[in-house]
Amino acid sequence: AVHRVRYEDLHACPHATFAAIVRFLGLTAEPERLERAIAASAFAVLAGQERRAGFIEASRKSDAFFRRGQVGAWREALTADQVESIVGRHRPMLQRLGYLGAGGALTV
Image 1 (cartoon, one colour):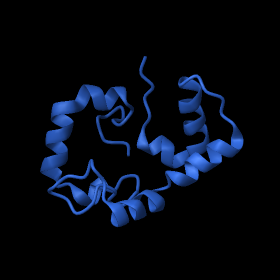
Image 2 (cartoon, helix red, strand yellow):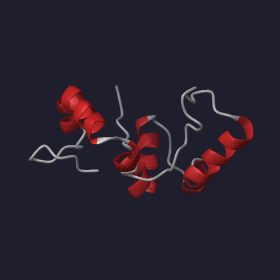
Image 3 (cartoon, helix red, strand yellow):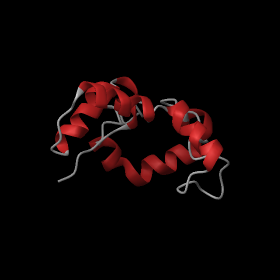
Image 4 (cartoon, one colour):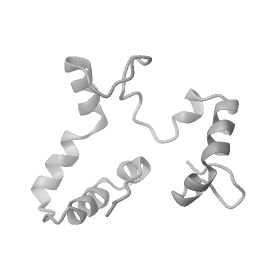
């Protein structure tokens, strides 16, 4: 089974999203442990860890894996042509994940 987690959901509702992940894994969502997990995975914490110790998943083409931690920051990072190319190639999946509105415009 697969449990889909969207960054936007983690950002908007971290407690509910983390609790759903824990339940999916068959674990008990103990409030204190959930709170610690959320705090430990906060953007500022992860970005700080990357600055201090590096991050194995980081791209060689980028200065950092954890860039800004903001929903919708892609609007400033990608050109209109890049967005058009991504949407053109991945439209069905973007729709399935709720990233495209009824008119086909990006919703995040």
